[in-house]
Image 1 (cartoon, rainbow, N blue to C red):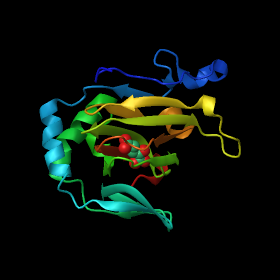
Image 2: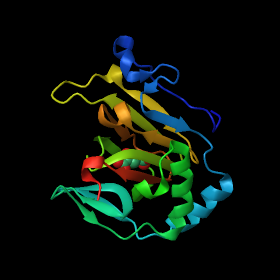
Image 3: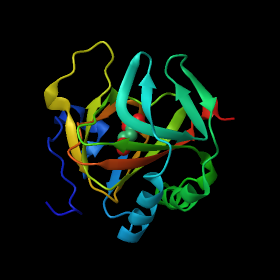
Image 4: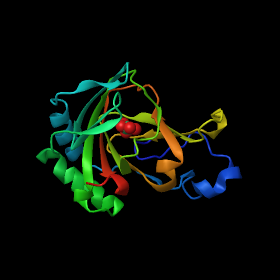
Length: 209
Ligand SMILES: O=C(O)CCC(=O)C(=O)O
């Protein structure tokens, strides 16, 4: 498959057509763009993120395989609170400006940054991001992964046929907002290769400082 190809593994049922962007087949509010970064930008970012003090993420009593470092704020899953974290470092600023322009949001609104490392075999389970944040933008570096999306229906059984899978290529970007942000969950299937992601988040209005 070409690196610039968007691959959607399973088309959604159309009983929920109002939830979807009919052109892309993705949930309304989810957009994806391959080749968002140049290979030079990717290499530069990789040379920095590989040296960051990444640590296994902690979700209550569960220690994830994914290693992360948070900037601006860090969510404590044991206490369910958003704590302060070191400010976004200078190396993230050009990327923040680029993603902000892509989504049409002022750069300073992206108050949170998360760098994640997925060694081969690292999954990220089904979740919606914590409600303290609103717009989510993610950039992929170094390797691809399969992101999956499914409708968020608390209390209902999840149906396999409702899952949409999307191959995220290195140097690509995705955005999650609106229906995709609040009406869907996402996850990452266990990675086949080393991948890094940089995720930026805006504060949700009710939680804005
Ligand atoms: O690595 C990614 O792009 C997914 C990140 C994500 O879903 C999260 O940090 O909650």
